[in-house]
Amino acid sequence: MRAVITDDAVRGQDRGVLMVLNLGQDPNSQPPNLRYDYGSWAIDGRIIVSGENGIGVVNADGSGYQAILNPNGFWYQHAVQNPNGTVYALGRAGGRLDNTPVAIYNGNGQAVTGAIGSTAPSRVAWSPDRSAVLVVTRDGRQYVANINGTVNDITSATGGTIPSWITGGLPAGAQQVGN
Image: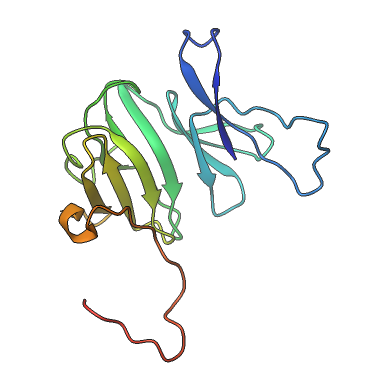
């Protein structure tokens, strides 16, 4: 779960926090707020965190932070780990509030793609296998960027609808159409 809170102690900006809710969570007890902008599950059950402080990994309770990539003047968001263990994130030079496009970066800070669109993202969704990311930019354009370096503008193909990733194979008897 991710929630956005306003915290004047953090330079007066709205800031993301992560909360991990356990199935047996006491409904009268708030789980710890993990002070990271974005999070996703790592393959070992920890959380890949990203945002203002770069990219790192923490235990589900927020302990044991280990840096993967320091920001060094970059903003990283929506970091994920693919099944082979490689970490990828969207990033750009500058800060969180910049309206500039992002690119895919690997866990070593190397750009994997060029700029994705011409403005900052308004919606981001990684594919289930973490090999591609859907980026909807603030100007309404839609892109699929791949960790192989390709970026495709799919805006005209979607007819104005926002696509979603589908997991699993085709049901028995179904036939794939198109390519």
